Length: 99
Image (cartoon, rainbow, N blue to C red; front, side, top):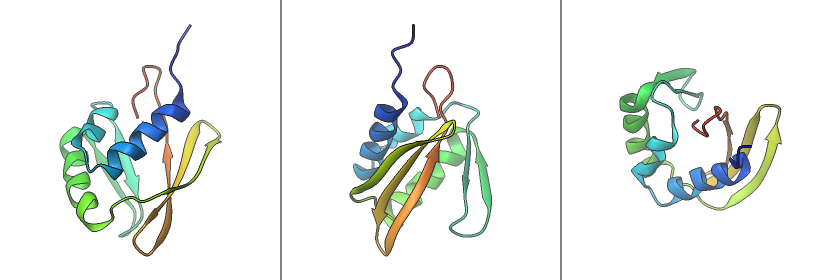
């Protein structure tokens, strides 16, 4: 029986983002896809690309307070504040708890 709690993992993800901690990259599997639409549809693959994304994100769009956290199908929806408004991330976890 797994003790993995995706809601808790999503909160850990937001905490790492708020702290501007590169530990957030280790929350992704080595073959993870990170898709975002803030500058047009973009897909990043793997730790190197994801680490580069977070380097800029920490400076340009630091995360603020949690607005909402809820299951959304097979994902966890995390809505949080950034400068200029609120955004939502959908986190999909694998069987071992990686995004």
